[in-house]
Length: 113
Length: 112
Image (tube, rainbow over all chains, first blue to last red; front, side, top):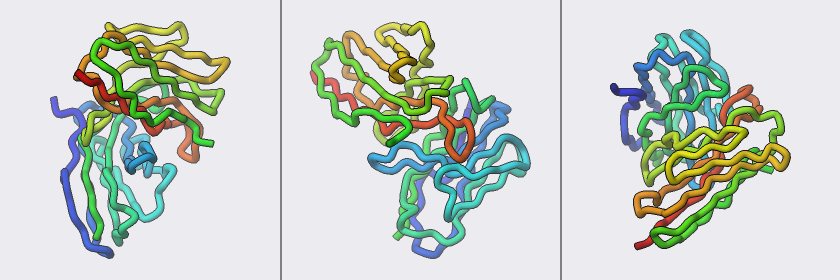
């Protein structure tokens, strides 16, 4: 039972490079989320999706794009990486948005030089 | 003011001690409340939901005070393995709608 799987686990990029983080869940959850976690800041929502083919902005969407072409996958893209995007990225999913806990992947540590 | 506020700690306690964390939230319309646990360099994991009547799970007790808008987590008979960061989570209205809002976490260190 994999739950939520994130790839890659670690990545180092140079400023201006692009990359895509992949999140996959096997729980048939409708809702998926991308967060970033920085020291002292807690988890901040970047983008989220309420179902296949739909995405929406969270609290800190600038510099990121997302896609949800399949229900089980949620991709986070950085078109032109900046040092301010150095962070730990967590994907999560839930059956519903409200009254339901979220299940997290084990994170992607991203460093932008 | 942050939507969900927690004392970052660290709380340093000896094994066997009882320790309590509080968390305050600003959105009086919040309906769902959770405590998550996050180990160093790991993902957050659900510890327990918090119900209006209060609830207990083994050594852990969660309480909700809607009037004062705070939730608490009590850990009895602390174990070394309880050392972690505890995240307070509530539903909150931000520009993403009615999503979960995470506090910054309270770090607990249980010493032998």
